[in-house]
Length: 384
Image 1 (cartoon, rainbow, N blue to C red):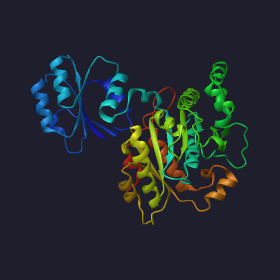
Image 2: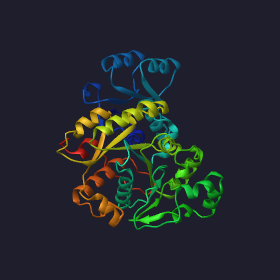
Image 3: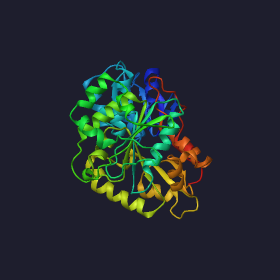
């Protein structure tokens, strides 16, 4: 979203720049500078009264608006509410302004801000490549000087890596997480989780569910999975959740709920569109998720495919964040090297780098590097 910013509040400006959904913040000095390119407007109250606000809404009926108020009155609040203008006092903390904007403009609940470093990856259908993409992205993100952890939460596929043996997996830790023992151990040893994960290419990986007895049963519960995610996001700068492609599980429901960015992996096949539409209608809508809360990654992309990227994005109704090219012999590379990015070639790794940059544009907290903010369209290239 391109947003016009007509305010002197530099603190709010810095917070707005952290919001993933706002791809460009354009400073203006007068409403006359607003064009059809702008989808949002943030402005100071200054000398505007309720008549001015109603007139402003009449001029721009489709533009999302937020007003930074100097003085709040009941009448002002009522007029803003009636005209779909978000209003907030200039004295509130900048992080609170950002939370209100996320909720009012994009429907993101405040609690989800606590999970802005947690990214979920799920697929439109089985064998779409969710686990490999999660591992490749983790490898790339770790090169940004970030501490990265991948949690395998797929209840139907453990995601074991050939040649990388480990005694620990999601199911083997689950009981101790559910009964609180693991949390107590973590309080004594802040690297407890990391010590039980595979170390790969600068990041850490917890293998998913190996016990097939629990795959299709209501054995796992969301509260325990949330505890695991909470511990992981304390140990790592970024946490990637491998959710797989079966959505009627506690792992997927918890993974979506306790992550802010949802990456959907698809291929240029009719099954991707058909399956996701069914998932959307039967599960995601019931959980309160809409298409614009996901970002699309096309895996095994080919420019010669009849089902091109434009057609697929139109069918799914989900914005595209990146296209990962098809790699001949990917299965053999996986068997020989574990993570295919090591041997997949320059185009593949360039695509992974582009996606990694795109999804981390708003991560500026702590010691994480401030990455230059760019429109998602600039990452995708001209040809779709």
